[in-house]
Image 1: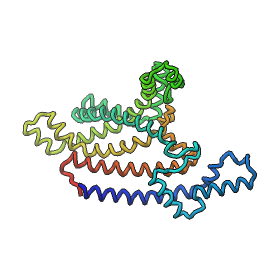
Image 2 (image 1 turned 90 degrees about the vertical axis):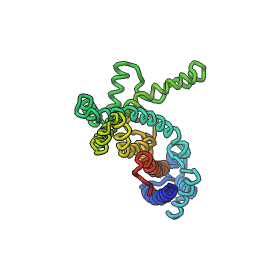
Image 3 (image 1 turned 180 degrees about the vertical axis):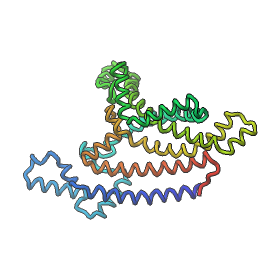
Length: 334
């Protein structure tokens, strides 16, 4: 296993190096000058000569007057030291700009992932056992609806039901606008603030759960049906083993391999956010940050997040390879 991990770590480093080169070339050759973005709005306060001199100073400060090779290695060196660049729209370092949205996205998606897996795995197993029966047909009908509706329509439906009709939950945002004032004057405790934050999380989490359940439940059902049709299942049943033992100790364990593969995509998605759902509910997450960075041509944030997502993807695939061995002893490290 140690040899396998060392090989995969070197492989990840090599591929990240290649990815970083493509990322640097892509964003460095984009139209526009970062120095102009830095001075955006300040041109009216300077003479043309002062403005040109300021542009030149900023280009020297950012290293844009150096060769592309020098700029690339300077960028890599800064990233290795934890410096991911400067966010021009907010005038803060990239890490400071993305810290809160990243935390918001991770917290929300962890809840979504736990709820989806807690619901869909038992339902998928039961649908496979009751194949062709009422429960299975109902599950297929539900998942078809889930596939047919985009997630933002689910979000709008949740708003109509729980806000417009019932008036139970807010339409969007992160917390009550008066929350900070009520905390400071003692009207609210920290527990009240936590409950308020949870109230604002319910609708986006419910929307993502409904969307995610459709695909995963079908996948679990298909994997279980395939496992239940294998010869070893018939052999286990012929030996007189209890049906629960056959299903959970034999069929489900072998069905876990494809399910783990799907889980890798979910793991990566935890850090990416959902652009449409975040827009619908005004949730300050990474999906919004990335779209805004594209619109504002915030190159430093885009480069940092692209490399970060590549790293998360490779780590996720490495974890999946390790989990394969844990769930299926027939698989060996090579």
